[in-house]
Length: 491
Image (cartoon, rainbow, N blue to C red):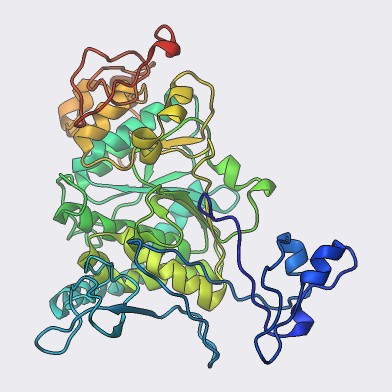
């Protein structure tokens, strides 16, 4: 639950479901009253632990409610044919054709049924895709599924090679983001971490050669990824960004369908410890999916706030069907400029329909920080740069483009890639050997490209940094210097 939302109101459908244990305090037991036909009963409900309150409940229907937009909201529990969805009604006007469009709340209008993504200001987060978008997705999927049997035969031996305990770590990348992929590899090796169970899905030949030069196992199929751009995204949601979202959906679907547990991560993640150790630990619990907490609490990502740039999926019939549903829903990814929003919507439906167990990793914990912490949790970031917390990974999310990601990672002490290897093709760094056949030159970029220690550079005074950057410009309007006197001398 969110801070301040620790309590719940329980309504009992019959007297037998009410707690009546003798271990309840007498004043609490006496206050437990089932409303009579006239509506009588206790006017002040007692406060119980969840265990006591649910002690006689064989079935619990849980509804999570909030109040986005701080509207004058009412909650109605209606006896009817059971529904596992919350229907949303708002006072909004109709347009000239009698349709509900992007209209804000208008108190003089009657209540009308709207989508769960209709905000109080009229913005609609969930809009059906246009026919042209759907047909474009069909065309892309025709190529994908026509080749699926051939692809499966090629991919299977790769997965058998890299899988450990039936689990694989997967990334996908194009040339425009290749320096982030290379930095991931350099940073992991700089910390002595093994990348032997990592499989990279390059979407172009340039990235294929760079990834193999970094000693990473790859799988590449030109026909599958022929529609993917080679340029990097300049901002969240642009055409290159959305196209690469489709590549993320494809590679996850392929690995899942072949029966493997998988950890998917974006290339802007750096490791401090092997994250697989967390997910393979018995202490991680019995969930189907684990997602890094995105940090944002907008309506489009409710209710899990799942960051789809770092998540772990245990392979079973529920997760396989989830990722199949996601690849079928590629027109939503394209329409909404986000596979995070599309997957969030599917998580909600699959949790209800199939009992898929979803866990969002604790945002206030130290194990899996990201862009939310970088931009909003200075207390945590100060502990991190002083070595007082020990995360598994750091995810440079919440950042508009790769240029800013690189700058932030540099001043945070998370950048290990030398300048001469940034934004260059393999042939510009070290030519690939002409002899040796397949696999020639595997790993030979590591010595040329990876620094033994982080390459630290200051860029912005108001962003977290491992050394004082107070003399630099500020990134944000009214931004405050990150380093303060109580932090002491540079680390």
